[in-house]
Length: 422
Ligand code: ZN
Ligand code: ZN
Image (tube, rainbow, N blue to C red; front, side, top):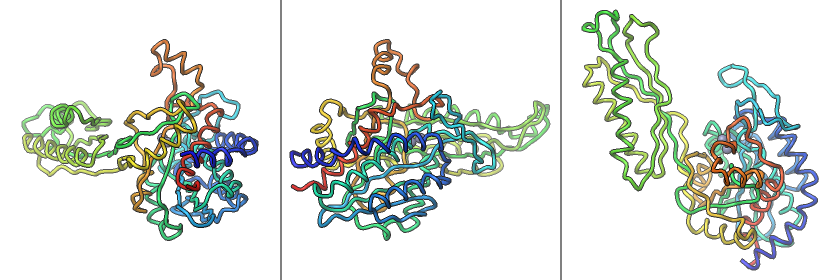
């Protein structure tokens, strides 16, 4: 780690100069957020900068995806990934660079748009790191692939880039790295080996009854009662079928049937969300849902087989042990005790689709974005959950510094753990 620390210090010497444009660039991104798959201006700004820094640029990958490649002699190749999309959330941060953008979503509705997940932090940090690595080529060897991904929030942006031939466009890489800003003190970074973010699946379940007048239940098969039994019985999956040491979530987020008090409807639709930390538990839970729904339909004498439709699937983020140790060692050497292990999250990410498609290991780390004093204050009073805004909230507002510096440093330090001379 001694060599990579020396290389990191040398490359990061230019950080003050990067900060000059990076903070303004970040404010501009924050003020002009774009919805998933619509990251047109963001992608254009990213591609422009990468060209300025001397990267070979491929754009329009999987829609609006952009990749910059910087070759610097023989050596390993490292892929660094940032996501670019914003959310249909109305910003309430009160920042002077807050978004007032409104846009039309995929369903044709006009919605407010906000960088409520901090992907603007990821883009600005990766561009900063890209410039530093381009200016500091004397201190490392190999190849940097800076990848800017669309549509993380809809869980299909990484897949879109892969399906659009990403593997053929870029040189082979040895490792893939990504980060996410989180409601933790700014200046902190941390990762952990193993399952870090959950796999997520959403499922629409349609069950059928036989409609009739509300006064004549004997002529009906009531899908409302059927759906109610299913909701109750589904609660037994996590409590009775998942091992106590494992963890999983099953939420019935939506249930719809009928429209009138005196009409028994002929169907009910339930929408489920499932979070798991292993492929085995995931398969077992999806199988259990099918088994319970099918059996409850039979118990109710349902006239038609139930239908299952899985959507919004996020893969498991399962950090490779050797890769994570290498990054953690480099972080600890550089950041000292500002590097803390990252606790397992119930959130999900589609980043791992990219290393999976390229057949390379990866690690994913968290980056604090909350003003440290405010965080400590809330912690002291045991009020973190109540007072510290989380990702996707209208008041999620990462402080610009030290968040951007730390995100930029983390990418450079992690990349150099492979690229610095031995
Ligand atoms: Zn998000
Ligand atoms: Zn996010």
